[in-house]
View 1 (tube, rainbow, N blue to C red):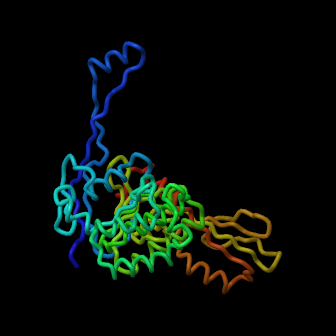
View 2: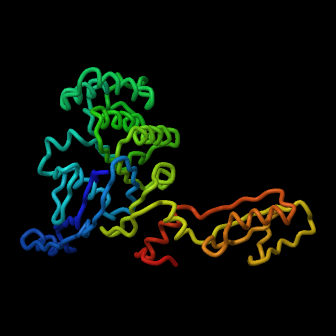
Length: 331
């Protein structure tokens, strides 16, 4: 299988004004400006295979959007290489954009004063989309994204959720092989988020390669198998989401309710539990104890009425990674 995206030692630096305080500071800033260099992306390398759906996550200022802008050709790197389907994004611009789709959650690509359908017709002409393909895709997206109620409305009159659904339709009208989504669910309500997630799942099932940046880790949990964790411009982790959580999830919580009041809750090999109402709460390290074996044994030897395993939230796992700043060895 040919690699669709190759990134090698990618770096992006920005030169910013170092502002000094006070009246004389402003005077010196004007006549004798001082600059400092910020490295937003710091020598990252990765490959993306066809059909992957990757979560690209990190805190504000980690370098996620800067990476996306270089991958889409909007920014030229300070150093390193990007090759996408044999093209260099900022050099082969005209040919390249015909093969990608882009959605920025905070920016619009549709025409502000035009009805949505008119914007889509303009994009049809720009991308030279054949009429049968345009009708097929639009008909499918109208159903999946529920566009009919606002298709004739000007973009400026749409809610954020409606606009994002229209933006997704616009980004995929020309059947791009590669889709970049930068915070597509930011600011949306629960219903709108789930509709957009379902559309992303549909594109993935159809074989589209997708790179998704998001602050909503629910997007990652529900959509992605592979994640890249970025902080201060460096990739801290690149791999399977399940492996990430199993390495760094830490202690799980097992809550058990027994049928017999006489149960003391003491289980061999586990620390004494904490009592919460009718439940005994145990702390379990999955790296030391096989949870499936433990649960199976518990049901065989004790009168269990109810049992629940609670894993730490993905947010807690990611926070732990940022605190460690390294994924070479788990805690």
